[in-house]
Image 1: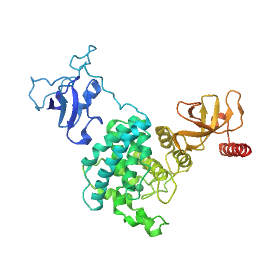
Image 2: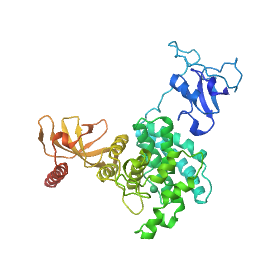
Image 3: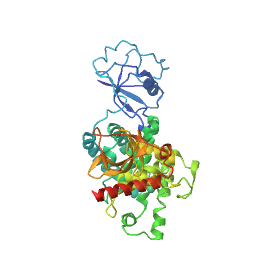
Image 4: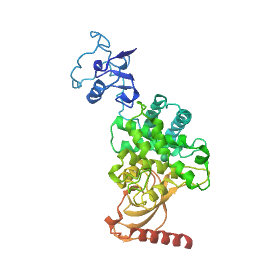
Length: 422
Ligand SMILES: [Fe+2]
């Protein structure tokens, strides 16, 4: 049976079915779990939720000797007994994070999340276009679903949302940036609340596009100076649309207003530079551009993920370099033009993804690390769990490749020469 109890009555061994209160006050992104961890218990007791819904058939029942919903001093948290709790021994321990799954398996679930997102985020954006207040409660649970999908497999959803039709571009771009920011925030080990705020920031960052005439957003030809100026107003318009909505975290306002600022101060709307731009806004800038350049658009061919990461990494002054590194790592992808070490004592140049195989990457091994000498570069397709594997990215200067750009061109030229001769 489900019972509503005050947070201070929650005990270890109870099965948490849900929370009552503002979504942002929930101490956990997962709503249903068996409470076994003392830190989790403290989080619940210290949270601002109005009540906790516990399932006494799946865990310990609330004590009946204390009146329900009466404020009382919280009991000190007791260390969990080493003996299994007979009330909970029947149930498997909860996983702290969603179990990882394969790409194909997660792709099906991700497709359902994307379909739901189209409707819910679309409705929220259309409400903003009509001048109505945005209803965060309608889309907030979506962020938890997106996070769970990203935790199970971080490529399925982010790959799926690269396909966007003209009508749904802004909504799907928002869902994509939401997923990318969550994925990056997880890599940075940020706490649950911050990860949630990051997701909301991604979802709302381009809300101001709803205040820009659709014909300008849809234009496939070159924009006039006037049209370009209109588009550049979207950060401030989005910030105004959010207004003082108490359901929106300040981080989302900040990212909405500053996601087009650049580290060297040449961005807009304010030309902020370096530390003047918050970490969240810098992350938003990276995720925003990555999704834009890798998305399928009717008027341009998208860059492959490897190509996008390789090119973005070379844009001087645009992004925070450290966060760009975190972003690349968070995707588990490799930037085209980068250097990697293989598990067979070879160094290789990353060429690109394989267009027909998402998980495969084309590389050119060109250097033997055991003999410390160059070898004939021949294309190799690295596939997960098959043949040589990539151990990680290497710094060219570590291997004394002082002019990496020149060496890279020479390796490519040799490989092309060899394949032409073959
Ligand atoms: Fe934008």
